[in-house]
Image (cartoon, rainbow, N blue to C red; front, top):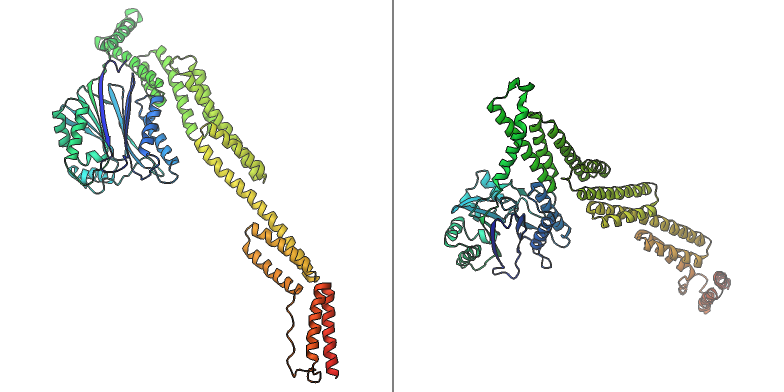
Length: 571
């Protein structure tokens, strides 16, 4: 096991400084064959959840599930953490700077998003320092800013890329780098590297022998500044005391075995022509390259790095072609074909063409049955996922057809079923799209409901108009009130106000205001003497009759008043 045959020592500290909350987070895992170290700095102000902790746990969780040094896979792990932060950005936009180091105890790969850093020290010198994804770093790369001003420049926190950023996300992922015994890896957040420069880090390295002593010394240097405000700071040191080394005898055993098999084949035509020593040596080296490349391809397959496997198998097959090794050409060609089918399937899956992805995966499954290097369960998992996503997509299309046919309730039911399946299958993009389609179906249903209600209200309003014209004012008021209630329900305020005016007019017809008494000296009143009050009385009587007998009573009262007036005029 690699870990048992190497010596990596790790220590870290993380403090809040003068602040109440510590937005930094560091965690690591050291497994038998691979290890991963992740440091992060939360850039948001949320007090309920720590974004840095979310991101680190997401990345480490993915690594624990599938340990790897594949650049593509590590980038995917960062993407998954990035998407998690976007999903969790409900109240506030979650933002994180993060640095990752993965190693197989011989080589390492590091990745950066934001301005947390990795320093690599070798032989008492700074061997490598990761680059921030900040505007100041971009200015330094363009020659607009000197390196010695970089750590204090005002744009050092103006990040071009970080986890949780809306839109595109482009973390930096390094190539595999060979580690040397005695290397020291230092991961730190801005709170440390802003206050402890590179020269002070080197001085601290000279004074100490253990990682715990190093991080403590760096903390002492930081606190010795005696700043009124101390930011959150985190430092993690990994001492590479011994790296894992492959047994060189194994490689030479392979070469010797090839030589024993290949050299007799170099005698062509029954000994008519003998290859020269140099030619034989080149052939042996080419044959060794075949096995080395094939082995690298097999390792890539085991790491589920299928694009890498395609590349390695292609190189191995080309080497086999050079020495006319037909057997290896065919065997490696089959492995390459299987890996390529999986790569094609992954590409189609990413593009949302799940039917095409399923076809590629099923073909790969058939090819892989004859090749023990492939994990059939992994391919079966890809097939199951593609099939499930395809079924969900088909349901989505059925819902679209129902929506187009104006079967809105049917469309909603189909979308809801598809969304439930998407949730169970962890089909995040499909779930999001189906949520939008459900909203569209609800909007269509609401529109139909509103149209129906409006038609009902229009009918009631017209019925009220007819009753008003027929002087059936009570029936008019009833119809208008019912129409007004529906207009209010569907939020048609102009209609509500229009019907209100009609109700008022109808009520005035039902209960007209009392007539004022005629003034003294008016026509027909001079000769009547005290009859004007009598006319008023008649009007009051008419009002009483109107209340008792309805519209007919009102007509009688009006008639009585007219008779009174005529009588007075005659006198």
